[in-house]
Length: 172
Length: 360
Image (cartoon, rainbow over all chains, first blue to last red; front, side, top):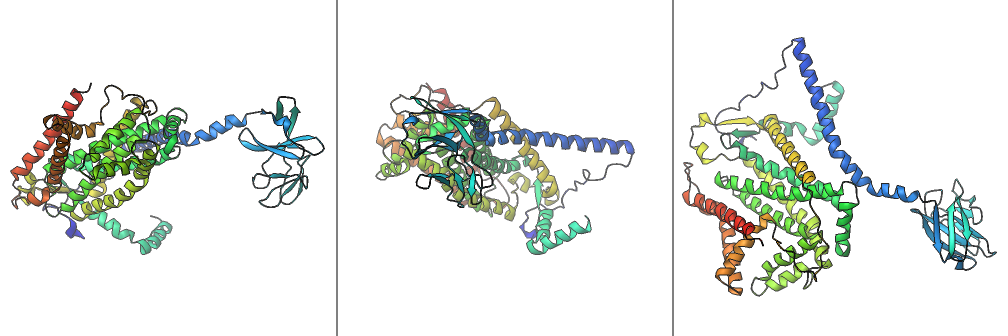
């Protein structure tokens, strides 16, 4: 492999002075150790100074979502006109939610995120139940209780207030 | 090394041949002479290219080409935490990258490092510079603000001036008769897919050639007797200095990017007149000014064509230098090539100065 090198004639300058172990005197040992520790700390600080802005940059949407999830109330304009036996999907903060106007006239609002693995669930008016297509979870469409299938927990209920301008949904 | 880590090393070594690579690295040396400073500029260019890849991917996380381009850059600059810094670092590193490549190119030229057997190093380097300038041109449009809009409009007039096929080429690059969302979409594809796909293998070839032939020695050093030429091991001596240069480059970049953040103008609007004092980026100033000066001497279309011809001829002469500056075996300076180089540096500097001088 050495034929690849176009080196003048002489051997390389030995640059080993750097690499020679420092004298064994205890004082110099301490200085060396202190220097290495200081260099290591400076390196860590430097890396942190580079990594911090990058982390914050990449985490920006998450932080924005956090402020959106702080929402406690959503007003759905004209939702009072929702026909009997139908559903309106909306976003409560950042996560999907549903407003059901049951055939008997009752209003129910729940989160629409399956408690099993997070799929968006759907209201089935014929069966009057909430169904998750991903793994067949079924919830009670009035209480949100997990009725059958894999879901471990019920869907959370929201408070509903209907007036002639719209429907107000708020955290229970 | 403990016996456990030694056995892990042996296991990997047997399969990947690490000790061969280590032996290769141990034997690699770099010459030491009065011109050693110039050996770092290839490495600095490489470092800045890596910075471009890294910050480019970060920008890609939020950038949306097409109709939303301006809005997404506005969001990156003003909404996302430190987005202004990432964008500023990308823009500044792009400029420093071009600068470092130019320093590298002229140092190679004046050290006559393009001579046998390094011709392909020179050709691939020139191709890399060509791609780098297309990187610069295409990236400049992506924010879709006023400046980038007009820069692209003006820049595409150059291929459009090529006789017969020019307008078709310009329309193909523009994605229609006007610079708009289709232009930004295809410039984006060019900038993040096509150009890297061309650049990376060529860069690999370029670096492989450096390993193959080692660093060139300038003619002044070749004249000295062999016993006087010196070299240092690449590992770790030169590498350590190389990395120190990278650290210095990173610090300069960090300072520039944070103290002089890259600005974002108003959204591009074809109905708003070009802002006063608009001018090309510094690395396009010289060709722009040369074409303008030629246009004054030979007005109209003939001037444009003459300018393009003269320009292409100059670039061709520059690229083909290894063929006509065959160099003396004695290492004596080939005067003509040297003067051509000086003329090129003078012309570039003079037209750049005139360009900035005459901004209105």
